[in-house]
Image (tube, rainbow, N blue to C red; front, side, top):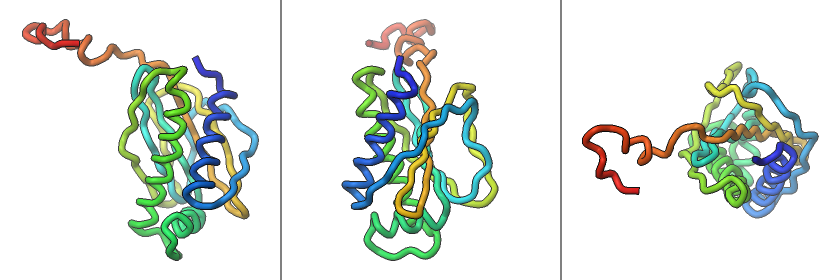
Length: 177
């Protein structure tokens, strides 16, 4: 079981590595917050990446549209003044790298996990949520005048591995481990 302080520390580490290496930017983390529910209504860009294995969950990076444009401009080395396909792709890739880095850091303790393909949401006054009632860890970041949040929700996987579950069905006895 990973406590929220260790999880937040790994989020900070993964985020700092991506921003320093891929964007050439320094970030500073704010005070970590434990939340009982998924992030509330927002405007801007949210990139989500799912995690699956013996532990399952979701990681998100969320920021304003202007911040997404500035980060994408730095990442892709071209200027973006408004959110377009390239900005959304860049934000998906940043989330993929940050959550992927986090996954690598926590796998030693939590076991192997896979990542979903990133999903990016852009708009005004929308809400994201998961069906899970598990706690979320929020780590806010600042990068110059910009701010963004990383939300992580991880919980033990209560489902049996698929092959084990399939063994109980008639006609599927030959499924190997």
